[in-house]
Length: 388
Image (cartoon, rainbow, N blue to C red):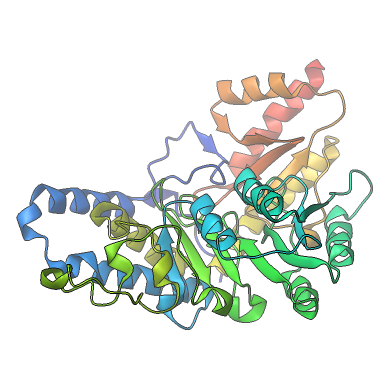
């Protein structure tokens, strides 16, 4: 059953067209209330108990594990950013000079810089798969190019679940199969997909999945999640904090220094991951996302954008075939000759919020959007086209 529009639980003014959740999600009322409860708890610090540092964290990890179909919440680490999670990954990879790290062209910088540094450290090669620049079915051809680029030299495949600028889907099951055949690690950035598009670690079997939390997971800016598979179970974290060690709940015994980490991915938690305000907000957010379900979110976004895509194509815009892209996020290539900066100014005047990413206008929608939001966008683009 198709979900109903959910704008009533958000606080988005009627004159605002917000098609930019891929940049920053708006919070809904339950998140706002949870944050206020966290502030009150901090105000009354004398009410904070030892369990308040641990039980909410366990609940939050359990919710994220459910979202990605992980069997054990101990496989989840709470981190402050995607770059932090990727740094933990790179810290535990050893390469040989003949090894290659495979990435896709125009990935988000936090999923590029870390691999540049790692390749330089070991004298390895960073190999980039180019995005097709012309022709039809670019997503299909990009996936074929990725598969062809995985060879016996490939040690790491680091990529998104989708492409962050245009929503192109990556066939991760097939990519995983070939990576495994060549004993290569598969490291996934799920920041622009997890929460709005189904993702199962049981199906994909990534060695690590890193997700920023302030986009499709509706968390505050400064929170993120990491799933670490078997390869990283006994790895070395990039920081040493008391919270991640065995028996850390025993505050009276903290100076009995413990050499053992808590199991699985717990060693990778950022210090102070039990943030009373953030964790409460994240719990409220994930409960709602799980209630909606990523599949239903995807279907809703398809229902409100399908006609708009046809209208945009009639205006001369180019959008990837729907079989090879997502519906919650997609890129619009504008007609040749259209002044992007002029269009951007006109959109801002009309309070229509999108992102310019490379050569794409990136559209990202959610349950607070309607078909009329896309009509506003189309009307503006059409008016600019008439002036150029």
